[in-house]
Image 1: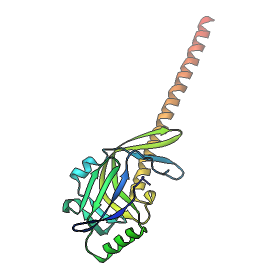
Image 2: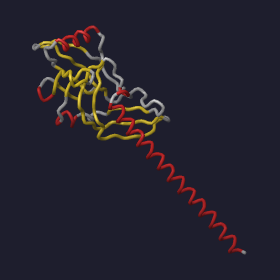
Image 3: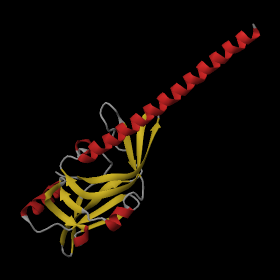
Image 4: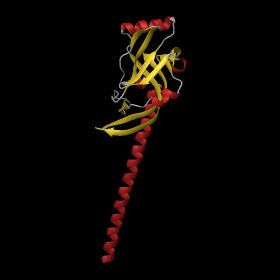
Length: 200
């Protein structure tokens, strides 16, 4: 999962708000991908464009049946600060939202997760580990979550698809280089034979 800062409840003039960081910049994720491991890192600026133009929701456990807030309604505030993607949610006055706030206050729910599509990234290898640097995303939702199991979400599936594409590209490149080297080797061998027969 992506690194996240702690979730908390804060009091405001209009009641309680849920706030925290849904993602932290320049900090490596846990190892993702199972048998094909890789790590991710989110760079500052990755969310800026999406925050300014997209219709983003705050959900509970990424469930659209439990809407906590929405940026276009003014009940969800999103901003990039020096730490990462800072979130401030004004939840509805409903029984399930009050129950959620009680769970956060108790420390039963302490983390957030994000739903997004990567629009710009860079794959590379660092110390033998494949890595992805996330530079720009389209953000759909931010969610307080019971289990921030990043690899089990649709985001994780999309990441694996992109990772598999990256590995296929790397394999194709390696195969092309191998074929070029083999061709050059055969040409050198043929040239050597031609020179040998010419000398006779």
